[in-house]
Length: 340
Image (cartoon, rainbow, N blue to C red):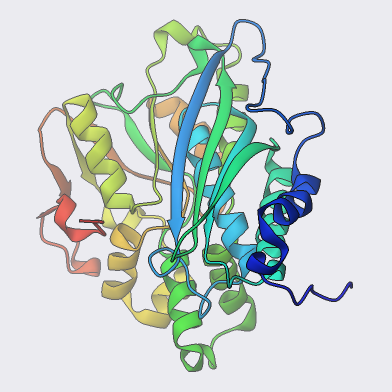
């Protein structure tokens, strides 16, 4: 492994830093004032932006530079997945103090490149500026056929709500990073899996590919599907889906996507809270006709779960369940993380 460059970005300057970063960009995409991107025929362009800020979304205490890069890309690709889109490329807006280590920036881009290599797309441009705080603003571009786009507002009463994977693992991983001593009695495989869920989450583009495979022989005009990324928490995603669709939902506590090892570690009450409100799991929630939901759950395997049903009511209710000490709790947006 090559030794890290000891210089700072202030020492190499803007042009020197750009020269270093060009190696991470797609060939022929940088060098002009803007990138020129070809959208596949008969496809729609899908665009999303996400910003990560030092001290808000990451810190040296919990997140290595490569993990910051991975998570920044994964957050955007997860939003593309929620829209049913395939990644085309990303642009990166990078704000840095002049004292930032050059090695940190290169490791940041190493993490971005690693995520893109697995899930698709390439760095096609961006911008640099000096600031007091590190921030990473990524705009991701994707494409999808008009009849394959997914939206939040198309949920219908009677549909089942499917989560593509366990929720609460990222919050557990963060806890272990903040307080490593708490994980000493854990199975090392569980500890490492939860930390990885926080540091290197996977956008569920694979789930969308499986869904498309299931729908291939179905008349799409007759199938209504709603979808949303759940990175702000499972409860938040269900509430947004229902609000956009003008409906409600009933969630079944015993069906929530909870890792049994997590429940054993922190107890049912804490695990339930992290599942509903922990956030940063980067899974998807899908509102689907029953037969499709059941087939997709089977294909996705461990971690995926049908967690409830869309209703005509306007409220989202966590149904009574003595095993989870729930008593018909109505879920609200105030329970989760809010920026302001």
